[in-house]
Each structure stands twice: as C-alpha cells, then as structure tokens.
Length: 287
Image 1: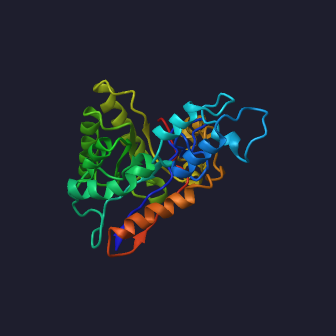
Image 2: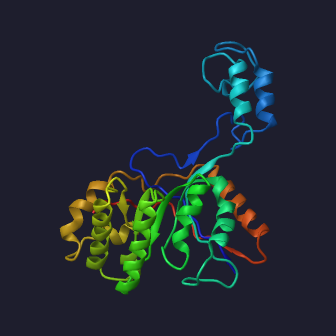
Image 3: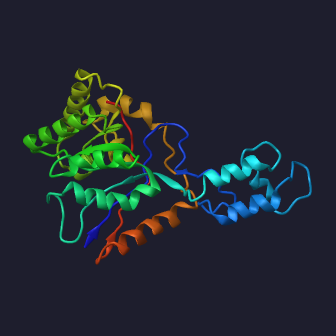
C-alpha cells in the first residue's frame, strides 16, 4: 500500500492563513486561468461606484478603484498559479515499505514532487534511514522545512536522529526543529527524556550560532496540557503559547478540494491505495 501521510501545519503564532492564494484569482476558484483574464477584460475600465458587470469588484486585483492594464498584468503574471496549503506532513514510503525501511533520495524527490506544488511548508517525522535527506530535497523545491526527529527509549538512535538534524540545520536546510512526535500520547519515552532531548537540540543549535531556529514538539492538546503531578512544573511554559492558537478554527473551503487533488495525483503515480493522515494543527512550544 502506498502511504502518503500529510496534514495541515500551523507553525507560527498569530494570524497565519491556512491557505495562500495566488495573485489574480479573480473568480475565487483557487487558480489563475483564462477565465480570470476574461473577467478582468470584461470589467476593464470599471471604477468604484459605477454600474458594472456582476463580480467586477473582484477584478480590481491591485486594488486601486479602477480596473486597468495593471490588473490585467497582475493576472497575467500570476497565470497558472494555484492555492497552496500552509503546510503538509510528508512521508515518502511506497508499496511494501514502512518505517524504518531505508529510503533513497531519488524516491524522496519523486514523492515530494507530488505535494510540492500545493504547499509552502513540509514537515518530516524522522532523520535516519534516508529521511534526513527530505529537507535537502524540499529546499530544492522552494519549500520551508520543519525537520522532524523520532524520539523513543533508544538513546543511540535518538542521538543519531539529533546529529543528522543538527547537520542539516548547519547546511541551512531547517526552518523549524521538531523533536519527537506525539511522544507523550504514544508513550514512546518519558516526559523527562523528551524535555532532555528538546534541551539537547536547543543547546546544539546554540553552540553553532543557530539559536534563531525554533525548537518544537507536536503533541495532542489533551495530553500536553493535562494537569497532573508530572507536568505541573512545566505548565507555565506551556500556557505561554497556548493562547496563540485557534483550536477550533474552521478550515478554508478550498482546502478539501486541494487535499483531494493531491490524493488523485498520488494515485495516478501508484498502483495501490493512498492512506491519508490528516490533522489540523501542530503545536509549537519553546522549552
């Protein structure tokens, strides 16, 4: 079975749009095509307050209260553009593969090429067995990278995961350093060991003058913010970022069609089924 796991990724506090729209999308169909050029042409010369064709207000893409050659130029320059989801979780495995099977960089690039046109960010889950090459491929495709490390009870593996991420960060391939994946919920290791590895990553980055790279861990809210004796000492640090996220924000109406488009692109390139693992947010914490 082909596995293409992805998710909407919210990684920056504040008012971050889940969808990036192309300039010149006059008809609000999440793409710039001949119909957008036609709409601007039909409305050409129309200004604010004038009786014009229905929907001409959207043709003023500059906007400067007059539909002119500049609006035509904006649509022309954006021709062929499409909406991009803010970010996608990425897994490069194909039929018959599963973690921790090794993955080649060629395979990573082939699979990443499916989702790259639809996203601004990608997030990986691990940094060994070939997955450490995901950031290099993603950067070549113009994507920002939240590079993941898999953290569990095996210290040797954890150390290698972190070493590979630090190396990629040193090469300028990492925009956000992600330590572990739902470690508390999955009970892959203890909370203390998770915090230890987060601090280790921060120290390694700082020692290389890379402290500008944010360090984060993804976790389900109910596990991360559960108040009990083992987490009470860290609650204040958790709460400092809790208010930055809108837990119940409605997805943009164009997101579902985009996910379907990505799914169909994956199916066309495979002879198996596609497994979609969709989440709404990845929580960003600074420990």
